[in-house]
Image 1 (cartoon, rainbow, N blue to C red):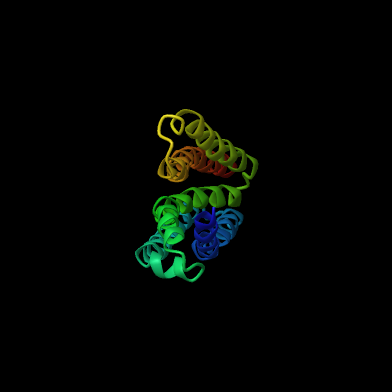
Image 2 (image 1 turned 90 degrees about the horizontal axis):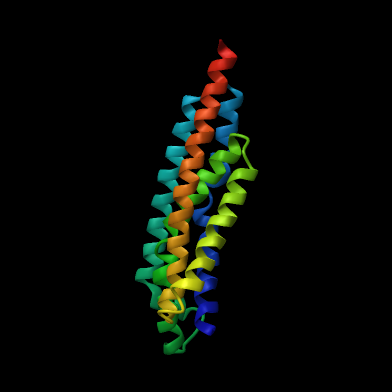
Amino acid sequence: MSARTVATNIDVLLSPAINAYLPAAMTFTSQNIGARNYPRVKQTMKLTMVLTVASAALISFTVWFFGDFFLGLYTTDPSVVEVGKIRLLFVVLPLALNGVMDVFVSSMRGMGYSMLPTVSMILGICGVRLTWLLTVFPMFRTLEVIYMCFPISWTVTSIIQWIFWHRCHNKLLKAAETAEA
């Protein structure tokens, strides 16, 4: 429990740096829609995706690589550090996957869709994690298997959000074409 708490403290410190681009994605998306500059909606999503993933990868890899140091800021117990490194490996290192999911969500919110990405994110993350914990974990009862549900749920939910983003974007483009005609 101590190791989870220590590693979670590090995770909480990383989130603002990784999620810093998300309000920009939402703001610039909605501004471009208001200006009827629809090609920039996709450009905004792509640029935000690159910045978010690059930042997350750099920060996550640094924290994971220097995990002993960062965990040592919170504890001197070597066993807590070792168990904390497991969380860093499965939860902190793949944080870019979480960033991908969040960029799609922020971009859709900027397009005016707030309920769809929110509900699908909750169902995707919670649904995948609960299914994982009820099916896979009982067969392989290890801490690593528990933590694997984080990157798996982020990946599945990112795919769902990608599909929804494309549908929302296409709907936006069709509405713009209809308005121009």
